[in-house]
Length: 253
Image (tube, rainbow, N blue to C red; front, side, top):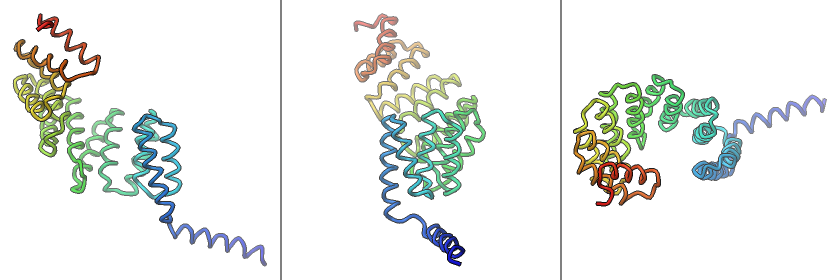
């Protein structure tokens, strides 16, 4: 009789534990481990990031934020199939999770599945609680630019800038789309606006110099390349600017 009762009691206890959910202590430890995992991920220490995030998931298996971070970790490792799986798990647990939709969109874009990517970005920006919708619009801009739909690309980059006037990469994307359409004067104006926001943005000066060359405005191009040298410590960017100045005969000026 006792042998029959014990398995039933054990099953009942396990059922109660499952219904009880994750304890506050386990949630707290899971959150701490997730934060450690994020730190390791930012440091590109992928083994340590995977260790902490996996443990966090074991401690708090219903937390979609942990699944999203695991997706980013797998994406960084190059395991794109597992990354997609974890992004979709996160969305399954929280269908309105805008950040997860945006990150899944980035992954799908990386995989060449552009139509699916755009659908995920649209889901992200449709959530009025998404704190950074400019990233969704920016990513749609990149996807439309990739497929040479310049009008839509410009529209998406423009919306990103309206939402965040300090979003420097959105200005660069808009300028690139304008240039792809042969509108180099508009491209230059966009980059000037970008540099008004951040005068020390060396890559912006590099882009502006290149656009001025397209417009045959060599003196202004040289000024832009000198600003690259004034604001950049990155060897590749500095070397490119210096080489172009030499070709313009402006290296010593």
